[in-house]
Image (cartoon, rainbow, N blue to C red; front, side, top):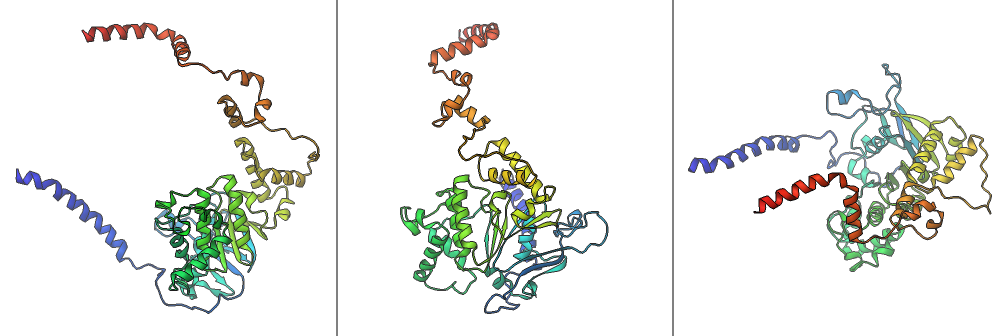
Amino acid sequence: MAFGAIAPPIQLMSKAASASARMFEVIDRTPSIDSLSTEGLQPENLPSGDLEFKNVKFAYPGGGERERVVVLGGDPDDTQGGEGMSLSFPEGKTTAIVGRSGSGKSTIVGLIERWYDPGMGSVSIAGIDIKDLNIRWWRGKIGLVMQEPFLFNESVFKNVAYGLTGTEWEHISDEEKLVMVKEACVEANAASFIEELPDTYETKVGEQGIKLSGGQKQRIAIARSIISRPPILILDEATSAIDPRNERIVQEALDRISKGRTTITIAHRLSTVRKADRIVVIGAGNVLEVGTHEELLANPDGAYTRLVRGQTLLMQEAGDVGGEEEIEGEVAKAEGVAIETAQGSALEKTTTWRSRLSVARGKAPVGDEEAAPVAEREKVKVMGILRSVRLICWEQRHLWPIYLMGFIACLGGGE
């Protein structure tokens, strides 16, 4: 009896011991990039100059087939050699990186942040290889806004103040930090809704910011990224996970904070990169095109034009109305297609599956009921529960014999 009782705990202990071996292996591993290292250059100010990729080739470490897949700088013809990828980000300008999924956009962010080092080539700032800079100091000069913002179960103040970690303001008093937090929130267009919270800046945001909306969480994340006044700002799909209304608010904040900074924007929605000083089109880990929005659209067969055209068609199929309409008009103009858009003419609204569903549910907004087909409006009828049950029973009349047999069986079982 006693041995039978101790058998399950012994089995759990053996499983824990085997699992801990892998855990301690990770803990004891010496990383190739030590984020706590005190070595490297730490200039008083960030060197003035462009951020450059020179003949960069990169494959994710891990062994096996993974290391053989060249993510950046690979030869499109799958032959040996190749010069790698070269790309520059002008100081004080906004550079947008666009391309299809898997083209290497987020990998560029990882190399700039030094989460990885390139297998060949270099990443430099003003001619200084970032490997020669202290990694903690270097990352303190970069503000990063990710697609999915992560907030701690702390107050708004602490979540924004965490952006000062690793900087010269890390150990200042809470009063001084609060001043900087408020300035950052105003710049990130977040102060207005924070002031309306129950405890303003001391309001707890909940686990992963559950008490806030997606746009509010993103604006707090933006404030956290700019509170240390970083000269380099990276926006990795910063508006792709929020709704169109909040996207406009967040985009206005991003446009404001990007001025005067070396800004790198990665986006799938091409309407958010139109104002960039330079647009870089990436494909299969290589630079395909570089230019402004107008310059790239001037080539009707270019990679950027094809991306815009494909995204516009997808937006139309989904029934989403936004900034893509203006881009579609510019694409058509670049292709020489005449589009009649008289200012006084009424624009017809395309009927989509969403609008038809809204009409069928009786929730169409004002003005949509008149535009909906008469046949669809006639389908909307108000019926009581008894009439609904009778209608369901009549439509299933071919199953009545089965229902009758089941009813009789129930009566027999009850007796």
